[in-house]
Image 1 (tube, rainbow, N blue to C red):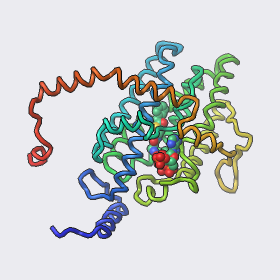
Image 2 (image 1 turned 90 degrees about the horizontal axis):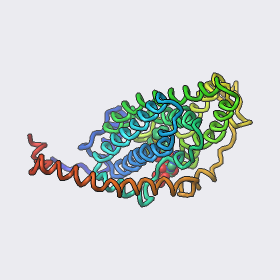
Image 3 (image 1 turned 135 degrees about the horizontal axis):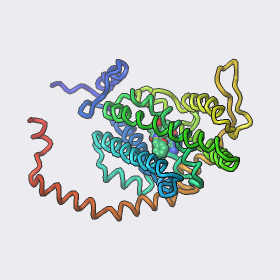
Image 4 (image 1 turned 90 degrees about the vertical axis):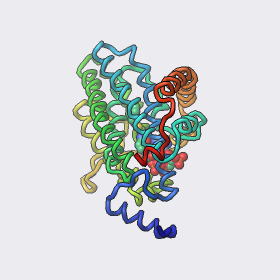
Length: 322
Ligand code: FAQ
């Protein structure tokens, strides 16, 4: 085979993307595409795993057995999402251990939202409604992302996220139909989670480092600001059903734009949280490191068992030939 020079290969690659052909693990891809995907998919996986912590805090304190079962199932789904995503990232040539090491050393990010504390039961409602709502808005377009293994993982994840958002809305709806104290608890949770949930979409497009290239490669299908606007439009309407107020005096329907206008996001807070100085960053990373250390014996036992079952596993090349 005649080796194509790099620009020709890159052109062919971009043609494939433009023609909506998925890129698969063994296809040629620019190194920067591979790196961008590893960064985004692994950070997404870490977000799912770290995201289990604020909710895990409430499993033993859920108000009824049914609520406890539902929350437990939701948190287990998040573990599953993390695993599909780590597997998708592994197809790009990074090992799970490397990704975990990057999380524990602080090199890899995870979503800013999981650095806030969960103070009351209503926070489980706010996380489901707002955080999962933002996650769905961002992730449904990722079902059509250009990298095959990531797009396929996202299809199942989005189905489960829809149930998660619904359960959050249901928790808040129940509280809002309850006593004045319960309704106040729901309002307080929304007051605390609203602005951080808008930050989940990332910086303004003008400040986004990766959006332009990621959109050209169709890793991202919409910009950070486009998705944030869609989220505000959706939530502003749903808040009316709950009879809750979003804590933004500038939130107002704009007839000309056919969108809601909304107030200024505190970007200083956002950059501060993603650089490790949010209210719970230290606590979250300490919890993950501790879980990793305490799980060492499980990994060793699983590896020993696998070795006993398959003492001479076939090499990757012979699998390909088979
Ligand atoms: N938090 O240039 P951009 C969930 C970083 S899953 C932390 O715009 P990009 C499920 C960004 O990494 C939630 N860092 O970046 C659940 C970059 O820094 P870097 C997670 C953020 O990648 C629900 C820098 O800022 N979802 O919630 C954030 O093009 C309930 C510049 O930003 C995903 O990961 C942030 N919010 O766009 C679980 C979805 N925003 O890497 C439990 C997939 C930006 O150069 C309970 N990811 N940064 O050091 C994406 O769609 C994109 O990566 C964005 C950021 C949109 C998050």
